[in-house]
Each structure stands twice: as C-alpha cells, then as structure tokens.
Length: 145
Image 1 (cartoon, one colour):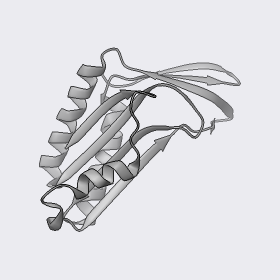
Image 2 (tube, helix red, strand yellow):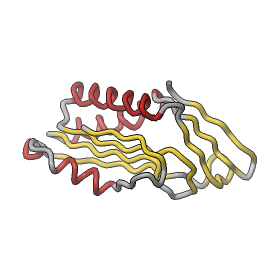
Image 3 (cartoon, one colour):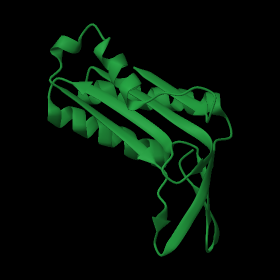
Image 4 (cartoon, helix red, strand yellow):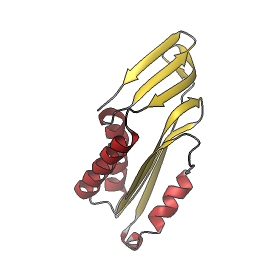
C-alpha cells in the first residue's frame, strides 16, 4: 500500500510506476487482476470551457494520512492485495494528470470495486479545494474534509 499527495513538479509518478509497485508485492502471484485509473483535467464541462484548474489542500501531511487510512480500510474490506495512489496538488491545464490509482487483487470484480471506491471516496471525503478557471468565470468546489 502506498499513498502520496505531491505538489505538481515535486516528483513524478506514472500509471506504469504504480503498476510496477504492485508487481513488486511478494503476494502478486495470488492476484488475477490489476486495474488502473488516471484522472486528468477535463477541458469542457456543462457548457463551459475550462482553461486551468488549481487544486489545493490545507495540510498535505494530514490529507496523505487520511488517504492512507482510507486505502487501508478499502484493502481490508475488499481483500485486495495492494492499492497504490498518487494525488497531485497545484495548478493544472487540460489533459494534465491529477490523480492515479492502481489496484491488484485476486479477482477482477473485487479489484475493480476497490478501485472505484478509492476514486469516489478520495474525491468526496478528503479535504481538497478545486478552483476551475473557465471562460464563464471561476468556480470553487470544496470536497470532503
């Protein structure tokens, strides 16, 4: 299990890096499925063009600890072998990566469900503030916390 909240440009991880981490798990031979997800900045939403996005959290260490707890809970509940997550904060343009997740589990159904739960709970439970700069103005979206 690994979880990182990183400032954009501080360190870079790709989906392949996370999948490699999963394959390094000594229990990988018990797995039959690996799923991955890459969340990127969308350029259009509800009739508006998004120019850029700023994502922040008040306390990176606290948010990372909460993310680790969330992942630990999901791993135990779903009985997947390993979950790795990287979530970036900073300023992003359309097409740039904000969030990556990789999950390894014994079967595809529980691995996929675990990945979806990580995505949804991270979005709604962790303390992120998203500012969308659009052609119609700025929108502030708070989540979790």
